[in-house]
Image (cartoon, rainbow, N blue to C red; front, side):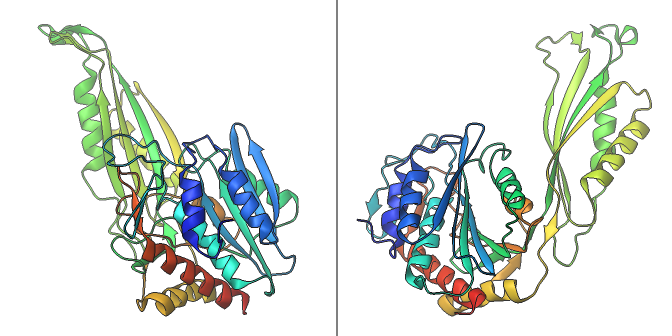
Length: 375
């Protein structure tokens, strides 16, 4: 039987499951069996084709929640080992999900196993299989399920990789928002030798993109980097050299701090586009991945940072950098921070974690539990 107080065994069992989004491939059976043996009540929550797990031990407050995901991105090419073999090479564990984030989930469980069952408050785990996908049948619906039952975590620690170099470098206390835009500019097709008989949409698109990108959105703030406008694609679908296209499409992403919201950015985008191209012969679609958020500084954030310092001797940076995570949903329910393993190999071939980091993370999570629950 796997020694749950040692994160290595459970990490290897989880990595050996080919749980590429939205497949579970038995991850929840492995994790559920481990948690049942530690006295947790487990709920297998399926939404659409996605399986999720909510587990809780205890009924009193506070309810401390660990959150994470068992789904992984496809392994891709270039591996020197089988990405799902969970191979040990010396003191390093290889495999898809080793750092993002099956290793952290194993460290959740190890911390709980070491803590013992006689602790104040409650401990819960919110584990989704839809973090690397569309994120519509995972954490959001699990939080709705909890709300319907009158149950809400009092605080939450998400085990996403947060450390750029070494364990203890950084804890995430917020995230920028993310907005994707798809712009279609229409014209009239024609012969390149007779441009006066056509309406070329490309110069109009160039004017629009210049207007959107010519000035910084802001200079950043106390807690956030400057917001960014990034052009991601331009496409005419036109293979001919002598044809003016009938339309052109562009895609872009905006990462934004607390100076903006998706609503205010939508208004700015439409106003700027209309000014640059008064013809009105364009369409803009906006998709919002999440709004920016910042977890208030206070006892919970301090407890996590102090636990990291206890184990690593480092004072972690309180960071808001990087992309989005499911913390963007959890922040609506309770205070949330993120701390996990090093992110240098996540989503890459030969994803790997030093065994010392797995052990260190389990120790940190145990110290967080002791500080928050007051044991």
